[in-house]
Image (cartoon, rainbow, N blue to C red; front, side):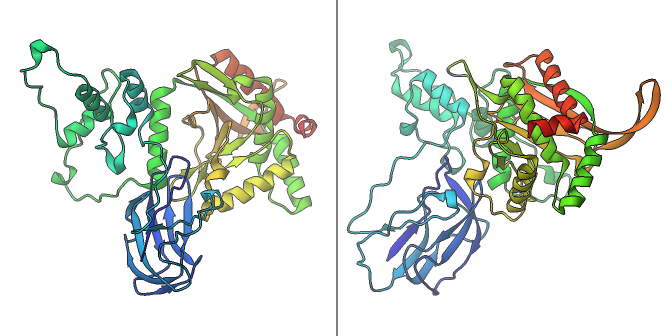
Length: 430
């Protein structure tokens, strides 16, 4: 019998939601046949069977969240491989597949050490209190260590002063109150449990899982940690839109405005390196990146993902457009792997196709700036003393005020507007 455990999916991932089983109990499966599809907060991963044989039992149903190392299937192996011989090592999940097997008796393999799941604030608290997170008993969801766990462990490590040895410790909040208390490590920020909304009417409850939960964690980190400032302007894209439509018809390929904006942003980042950086709050250093990987926020229906167009300074607008189209298709179909969403230096979010005149986007931490694109609209504007109708693109740059000031943002956006208003400048960049 093989106990097939959810493999270490890397990238600090500790759990996944079962999207689909390719087999049922009692079914015969061959080695490397698709076994289960699991969605993590990075991407959907299809995991093949490590051995051939008969499926004895499955360790979860569709919609269940399973943790790394938990048994998700038991397989009665077919003849041909000794029972105590473990399956071959798994490839990395960057290719969106994973395979691993562990034996339940005779020669158990020692599991590799994995990062302890904990929020950045919890890790910082552990460092301040001199606590090894690996020794802390977690009480949070999915084995996550909470700030209260760290404080409790630190208190257990230190004997009480002699004068207080006989004094009982104060009672701690329990249940939802304990969770709310542990969630906050920020002075004056008190999180209270929500009321029971069902007392006023019918409600539906949906667990916060996978990509949507990752978005919630990342946006909370961004909005709490980063002091956001927004600078807004409009770009006259009348000539650029006319050029784009002509080239689109001539080439017969998809050539979106977003590809031109990516190229213009890349030019702006070269002139304003502060917006292509990250701030390390622990070392108190600014890391300036000398490469340009632009993330494109994509709405997948299952949550927001940000695939990355790499080396935009070395690519033509046509190549960038092709990359955007490919990544957007993979995102919609759930085929993006984790590697496709790593290494971004700056993000663009485009709500124009969905409507809306403007937006203030949240920074994709640990980046320090994000550009929001609104909908291109024809507007009356004044040119050389005359009122004319022009195609105007609203732009909003949200940036980290710790690394740049309003004047820096104004210069960056002005340069961006200048490039978008003159297609010849973009062609020179290409």
